Image (cartoon, rainbow, N blue to C red):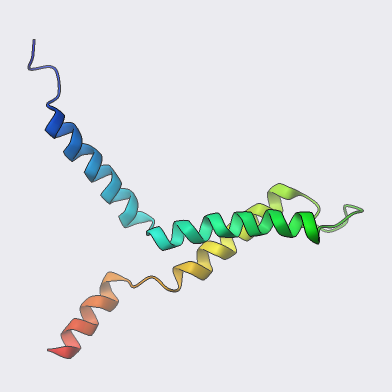
Length: 94
């Protein structure tokens, strides 16, 4: 009966592996850029947005937030060091 229940240590290791996989796919700096971009897109919609609805991106808050999120992700992703870059710089030093 106890064999069916997971060990708390195994659950902890499983949670760590999920977190590690997520951070490997989406580095923290890129996620921060995504959030900043979404907020920036919404602020842009509020402050600058299109009143009469003829502007494709700024007339809709969702499109403005989507565009801002993409731009924020790409902007912040430029500052992430990739594993290949780190390995190449280590090889050059040796």
